[in-house]
Image 1 (spheres, rainbow, N blue to C red):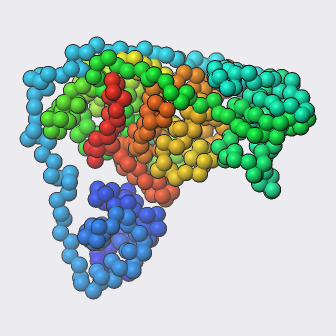
Image 2 (image 1 turned 135 degrees about the vertical axis):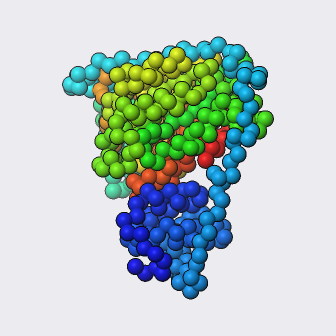
Image 3 (image 1 turned 90 degrees about the vertical axis):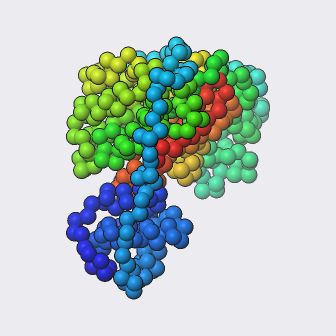
Length: 510
Ligand SMILES: [Fe+2]
C-alpha cells in the first residue's frame, strides 16, 4: 500500500462508484482501476473528492489522484470530516401539502389512450419468415417514397437502361468500401438487382448509408451499374401539423429503472413519486405535477437476472418475481388518476429479441391488477390525448452510434437517423437480436409526434422536423460495467412533455 491511510481490504467496486456518484464526480476507468488495485480506502477517497471539489474539478482522473492529491495527503497527514450532502439537506417532509386540498386538473381529466399498432407474433424463425420481414420492410418503405412528390415516379430496377438517367428504390444488400475510397452498393427490389457506384468525389455522405435499409438512388445507368448522383432517405416530412391535446395535460417519460439492482436509486425515485403526489417542490413545480396524466416507461423496469455474466453480485433482489413486486409497490404510490404505460426492455422478462411482447402477466400479476397500468410491447405505438407516441427501448441504438461515429452521450443523433430511415433497427441483427416476424414491426410507418427511448442511460432531447425525440435516461447509478467502459449515465432526470404545447422540460431528482 502506497497511501498513508488505513487500509480496508476487500473494498467493493460499487462503494467506490457510489461515493463519487453521490458527489457528482465522474470517475474515469483508469482512476477506478488504480483505486481498486491500490485498495485506497473510502476515507481517503472522500478527501480526494473534497480536494477535487475545492479545485472545481468534476472528473476524477488517475493523474490528479496520483501526481497531486496522494503526495499532498502524505505531506499534510490529511483528516477528513464528512460534509453534509445535498441529499441530507432535503426537507421534504416539512413542505407536505395535502393532495386532497388542491386543484388537480389531471385528476379531473379522463384518460384518452388509443393503441395505434399492436405486435402480433407469427414467426417460426425459418427462412420464409426472414424473407417476409424484408419483403414487408421494402413494401412499407417504398410506399413512403411513393408519397414524396420528387420521388414517386421511381422505376423498377429491371427497367433501367444504359445511358438513361434513372431513379430506383432498393434495399441495400451489400456495401463495399473500396480502397480507392469509392463506395459500391448492391441494391435490390422485387424486380432485380443492380450495383451503385458512389464516387469519393461526390457530395454523398456514404457513412450514413446502412446495409439492409431502403434508399432511393438517382443517377446515370451504365449497364449493370448506376453512377449515383443523389441518394435519398425516406425521412419524415419537412413540415407537418403535429397532433396536440386540446387541454393542458402532461406526460412524464422515464425508462431504465432497474429495480432489483443494488444501484437502483430508490431514494431519488421516491422523491420523484412524492413530487407526483404534490408533496414536494415549490408552487410552480406542484402546479406542473398537478397536470400530469400519463407516466410512460420505455423498458428495463427491473434489472432482471442472468442478463450479463456475474450479474448476481450487483443484485439487491434475486428473483424477477420479487423485482416486479417491488416495482408494483413503488408504482402503487403513483396517484391513481395517472395512467401508467409500461413497455419492456432487454432487462425485462420478455423475449430477449425485438420486437418484444408485453411483460407476461405471470411475472407481474400485481401490475396487471392495477387499474391505471397498461402493459404494451416494444416497440409500442399509441396516442394519448391525440398525441402519437412511439415508445421503443432502443436496443439497436448502440449499433447506430457506432456506425455514425458519435459519442455515447449523443443520444439524439441516432434517434434522428431512425426517423430519416423510417426504421428503428435499419441494420439487421448486428449486436441486437431480432425476430423475423412476417411483418417488420420496426418500420416507422406513421410519423410519431414523440419518439421516446431509453437503453443508453443518458438523458437527452431535441425536436426533429416537428417530432420530439426524448431519451429519458435512467434511475440506476453508474455500474461497474459502465465505469469499465467509460459510460457515464445521467440518472434521475425526468422529461416532462406538455401534450398541448409540445414543450419538454427536464426536472432533476438526483
Ligand atoms: Fe437499461
